[in-house]
Amino acid sequence: MQKSECPGGLQLRNRVTGNYLQRTSSSTPVKQRTTIQQSKSSSSIGSPESAKKLHPRPSDKLNPKTINPFGEQTRAPSAFSAIYSKGGIPCRLVHGSVKHRLHWDCPPENLPFDPLLITLAEGLRETKHPYTFVSKEGFRELLLVKGAPEKAIPLLPRLIPVLKAALVHSDDEVFERGLCALVQLSVIVGPSLNDHLKHLLTSLSKRLMDKKFKEPITSALQKLEHHGGGGSLIIIKSKIPTYCSICS
Image (cartoon, rainbow, N blue to C red; front, side):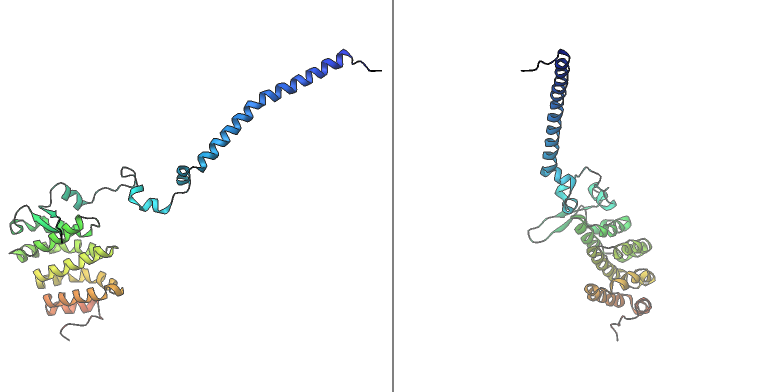
């Protein structure tokens, strides 16, 4: 015989079943929202854009295409580039099919060396085109004008520290431009350079230990001796004892 369930037990079971269904139905949207959020986050993390943000490549910092020119990486323009951009250097680069050249706004012999020669010497420390070419070629051409010795010698106390800054620069090309400019200056001022030579020889002595600079530095020292006379040899030997004189 089938037993009949009492009304109190039936009501209790209905309440329990109803509470369970209510909790189950109310938790379903939460689980769905959690699942959707997890899928969105996983898809965003797996995207190439997010991968670049989380794990940037070293080349991103080196490649100019990946650097924001208006970001914090942008450096303030150098003194020479700022002067050149404002027209403070009276010459401009002319691109040729074979080689570049300078076009002067007026004949270089009519230009005052102060402060133009010093400004061009400061530009030797530039590392970007066209500043590298303008400073190097402008310095050379200005020293070739008539009356250059009389104009350059009074500037030596201010010019030597600028050349020294190029000779101690970590960039090899900057050092080479500084060395070339020093030789060009010695041709023009001759023995007048001897009083300042000792301030430049220390950096040459250090670079002389590098095999790739041994030959150009030795050649430069020989030219300094040639144009500086006997007095220059004594100064060179005092700073670089291993130097062999061109007269020996």
